[in-house]
Image (cartoon, rainbow over all chains, first blue to last red; front, top):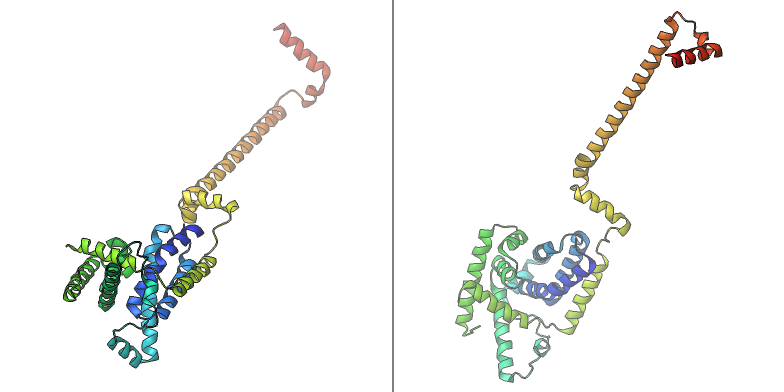
Length: 184
Length: 126
C-alpha cells in the first residue's frame, strides 16, 4: 500500500517524463500538462492505496488512456484541426525560449552545449514521429525502465507485441537519426 | 549498437531534456499537490491491527473459512458437552431418588438423628 510520501516520491520521479511523453504524442504543451494532471489525479483517487511497485504500470496505463481520450475528443471537435496538426510536424511551442530548457553547462564549451541541445531536439522530434504504439513501448521500456511484463500490462498487449514494437521503434529511430547525421 | 545499448543512449539524452520551463514545472507541482490531497486516506492506526489480522487469514473471505468456522465448531462442541453433563447429572439424581423411594427403609429415617448416630457407630465398630 503506497503511503502519501511514497506516492509523492513516485510522482516527482515520473511527472516530467510523463509530460514529455504526452508532448511527443499530442504535440501541445498545454494539452500535455492537462493530460498529466488528470492522470495524477486519477492515480491518486483510484489507485492511491495500491502497492508502490504497481504504480508505474498503472500510471503509464492511465497516461496512455488519457492521450487516446484526448485524440478522441479532438477528433470529435474538429476533424480538420487533427488533420492539419498531423500535417504540420513543426514545433507548436515556438513561443518557448530554448534557453529555458538548456541544461546548466557546468564548464561545458558553448559549441558542445549547442550540439547536445540540437541532438536532443532532433531526437525528440523523431520520437514524436514514431507510430504511437511503438513510441509508447519504446519509451516505457527504455526511458521509464519498465520491464517487458510491466510494459505489456500497461499497454494491455502481449509481451511479444512489446518486444516487436520496441525493436521496430529502435530500428526506425536509428535509421532516422543516421539519415540526419546524428550519432548518439 | 544493439537495441538495449541504443535504448540506454536515448534515455541518457532524453533525461538531459527534463529541465522544464518554470511555468510548466510549477503547474506539474500544483497538479501533484492536488493529487496527493485527493489520495484516499490510509486506515486509522487503531483499526490497522484488524486489517493485519484479517490479512494474515487472507482477507474477509479467508477469515470466514479459517477463523469463524473453527470458532463456531468449538462453540457447538462446548454446548453439546454442557448439555450431556446436565442430562447425566439429572439421570444420577433420578437414580438415587428412585432407589430411596423403592427402598424398604422409610425416607424419614434419614432425618432421624438417632438413626444417623447408629449408622456412625455401626461404621466405627466395623
